[in-house]
Image (cartoon, rainbow over all chains, first blue to last red; front, side, top):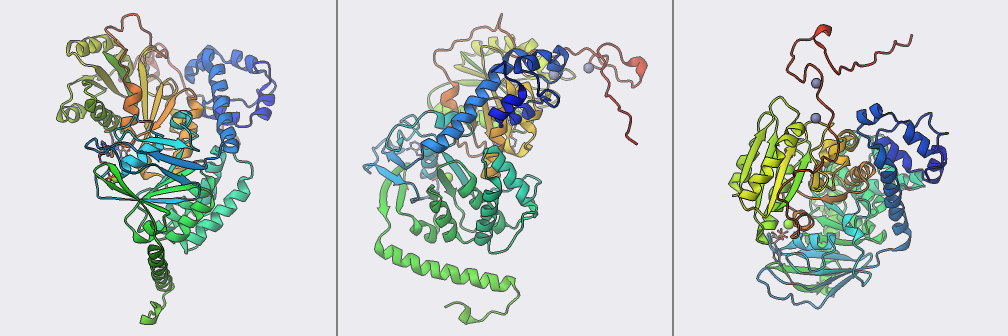
Length: 334
Length: 233
Ligand SMILES: Nc1nc2c(ncn2[C@@H]2O[C@H](COP(=O)(O)OP(=O)(O)O)[C@@H](O)[C@H]2O)c(=O)[nH]1
Ligand SMILES: Nc1ncnc2c1ncn2[C@@H]1O[C@H](COP(=O)(O)OP(=O)(O)O)[C@@H](O)[C@H]1O
Ligand SMILES: [Mg+2]
Ligand SMILES: [Mg+2]
Ligand SMILES: [Zn+2]
Ligand SMILES: [Zn+2]
């Protein structure tokens, strides 16, 4: 590899551009040099100036290539088809009473229980792919087997993406630039297409239209949440999505969950919102740090859910009407 | 005794992460002490004291805090051993983006936060580049997309590091970090003969030595000037 020119290397691994950029290495005008020549011509002064270690630069670059390739490879090969939770123990050391719980891709699990009962700990066990090495002693299997340790440590292959109420956009970019930046970090090829789809879906969730050139920091709460969910569903590589309370998000929550599920995500959410809780396939009840019970949403509960969804839709419609300046009447809620 | 060096930009969450990590280690019966390095002032020692953590501080004053660190670290390790600690942690405010306090045979942890902006990984140099572990904080207040972009830039600067996400407020991720940091077989009695990971540039201009006056005649030693190119017509 040291004998390849910079141009050849970039043709082989286009993502190396990012490596040069982030390490403040100027390669303009260096395309014809081999990598070895390029490293050799960096003067000691320049190396000191830019805090580059010439001896380790080559190794860092090969590490980076290996990381990125592993990341791209995983996406294609090993889809996460299921997540299994094996029982551990409660805070008082008693064994958890459920046998095991397997959740398939595009299923939803809700987690209920009082504050301090261990909901976040369960989510953390999943994120860490715990192997009896957390306070709960639970074990997590992916596709029925002990997962590769890389899920814990690599920065790109995170098992879990997270959404929560208090997340904001902090970058000073337009929606389009923002999505482009995310797409670029994911090294996807058909970025334009994907971005267009995210825009459509996000607008559908938000109800209130926004545009590619809207600054992300200028979005309303509902629009922000809608964009975050659409982006996580479509552009995040993580197969599992953890949701921590999005109850008052100002978006169509039902549609949001439908979207995540349609992208084959496994969704786990700590929530006490009945609409969200009943949309789940399984409902985990946590007490004293342990999984006390795993409930399947019953037919009666599904019926109740239908009524809740109708009520929710009615409230959404009333909100829309208000926004448009309409006068309301009691027949708007029926 | 175990010894771990924490570094990172001001307010990135170092103290918060260290405190949460110590809490997780205490549960396992591991005793931890902290020495805090800073430039002019710090109240972190009070935070550690409040949690019952043995703590000492060192203020570098006019010196680069990392240079100061290197000159004092052997005594720090002696203190930790005298106290009979299982683990000694140093917290350094990474105020000098050119230096880093990591030692070749000692675990180095860099704490940076999602709020500091997407160009931070590129800016902070050896402090990030030569760390073994990179802890990213404040993920609770930014979007998933921003977390992913930030982490991918960290990887481009330091592909070897283990990258962890820890919430300094809730402690999410701190237990997991603690299992990576403590090694029951490590026993550091002295740093004598150990090397810094990344050479620190010498402080060599007259201003390093206390000069305050502006003007060419006062600029002695290793002086470098901005290149002012001719403006284009
Ligand atoms: N929201 C949020 N705030 C954090 C997090 N970690 C630290 N903070 C806050 O950031 C501020 C600076 O943290 P501190 O630990 O003192 O940073 P240090 O200067 O690097 O030691 C404090 O107000 C912390 O409460 C985090 O993960 N999320
Ligand atoms: N099975 C368990 N064994 C020991 N500690 C536990 C267990 N489950 C939870 N904890 C601890 O209890 C505390 C509260 O749990 P947390 O997950 O934050 O609750 P919640 O999110 O439901 O409010 C945390 O410190 C967590 O680590
Ligand atoms: Mg919680
Ligand atoms: Mg501090
Ligand atoms: Zn310095
Ligand atoms: Zn100087």
